[in-house]
Length: 293
Image (cartoon, rainbow, N blue to C red; front, side, top):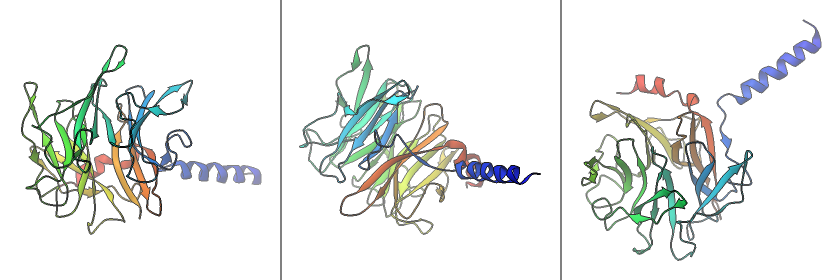
């Protein structure tokens, strides 16, 4: 092999190797502007919603952008998000039907507590949002709601009767109505923080945030648990392909299941937080599923 061929092979090898298993910032300078988290994308990935934080938690608003000619448009406040900084809107999530968006808001509520809201896509845009009501929402904070294909909603709450500081609950749907939420139990929930549950459309796995676990890498980590028959398996850390010494949160997946999205926060005087993506295959979910017990 000629010397210049060897050099070319080395360059190609390391370029390919560097691209494998890498997380990438989503739309830097348009969406990921160092003060954002919580991405939701529609089915064809041309409409995006996320949270603008301004580097803190005093003001939180949902922004939106559309992809035109492979470029994201200038972000604007979502039509259903409050634009006054008196209230906060967070955690947008597209339901599997692609026409329903869940989000959380403290509008008309105790400023410290969030409720779960829902908004539907209409022919001419998004309709008026509405609260999911007192069957699901409590007098405590209820947030980060995601939905399986059967309509079951998984969410975080710090309501009384839980195992820890925040727990994950599920509200099952029966004939179009929701049943009283049920705590996922102490296999998933601990005395610490369990939060930000992403439920898969088939309801066969759940990815969530946890803190203060012995196998954690730092601030907060993302874990996965699988449903085997009617029980959830012992949560497994997603590993250092995702988790770092900083805080990872807000997990979600593209509607085709090919990409995994999450947010990462670096704490300082101001929070530095962006949205990341990685190919789902890099998570090695099937290996984790075989290891689950």
